[in-house]
Image 1 (cartoon, rainbow, N blue to C red):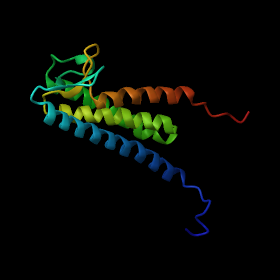
Image 2: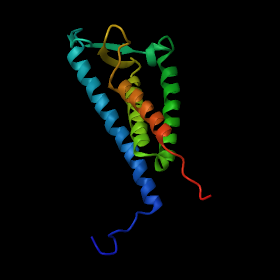
Image 3: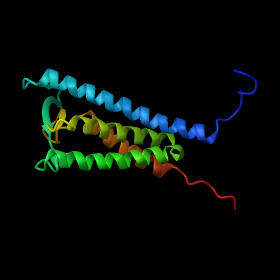
Image 4: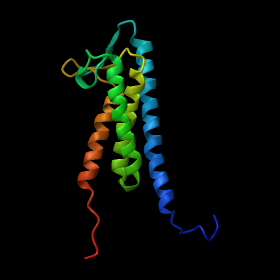
Length: 169
């Protein structure tokens, strides 16, 4: 590192690019992890077996709808189109807002986007989303659902605890 680069701040444009890359790369990693776990669940559980882990079972189910099977009676392409539009809006928000987000809200955006993309890609075959965490008292869900829920909570929490910038008065 040269003496000129020590202590030099990144330009605002470089910082904005980096914050956008963090959100997008984080989302891609989480979506890939979700899709890999869904493939593993299908490979291991496709014969109808279930694994009892106490309060939760690992059991293969498919959800043709969205959260809580809402819209399960709709054509798969309607669900795919609507979720695609929602993801496009979320992607736009995440990319345009990332530079002004805190680390907590960036993590939330990455988790929300990663979970949404993981379920979207899984849905593209028209068979529905692979779910495998089964409790008996709550709808069956998957890792992407955890990412979506935690990401939304982090986004809200990050925005609630972030103080607005002070004015010079």
